[in-house]
Picture 1 (cartoon, rainbow, N blue to C red):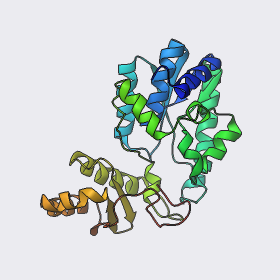
Picture 2: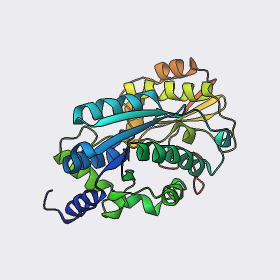
Picture 3: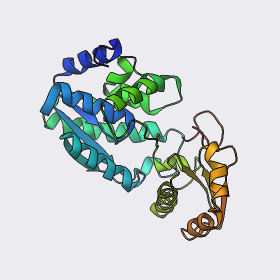
Picture 4: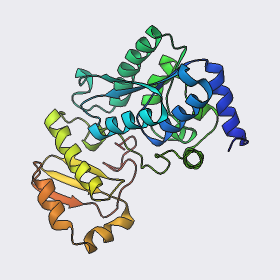
Length: 269
């Protein structure tokens, strides 16, 4: 890995930053970026995790634990729901990221960090990600993307570094489980989080619970659907998820896929 040209390019780009505040989610990409930056810049690297009502609590816990294991300075910045995204508009990712990263930039500047970086990778540029526009406008750097490192390499490098996130499934904020144009309440977000946490604890790591009012539509990897049925777990799943406030619980037979809410361009992740 040390001699891999793209890894060397990443190292050079991080070194040029001098000091960096990293927007840290606890996911595969940002963990690899954080660990690499820690190796190169040492204490001139700091992680900032953003906590909002639409980020699951277990993701914040993961971020805290990993930063502790890596010996990286870490701060959790908490924000309320923005009025501008209360109705889950199609441009919510742009509005959200612009607000959150503006505050992160201000905080990082106060602490003397020269740059702010995020975990956007080379594979992200080909997908519909309006939040990237906000990052570009705010001058947020994406060393993984700039070094041409995509998801496959990140997982491979992370495995070599013994990072616990090397095979961690991708996650997205809970707003992606709700149809565009729908008024979002904290109660709704909590029941989605409860349902997904329950399924994750059952062993279904890549999971989405798409919330259609009274209906919970479960997406898990297609190859795991027979496993779920064979284990005769459907009754327990139905009973438990219904207890979170749903009237009907369904399993999407197409399985989990990116943008699986409504099939349109830019649909939730």
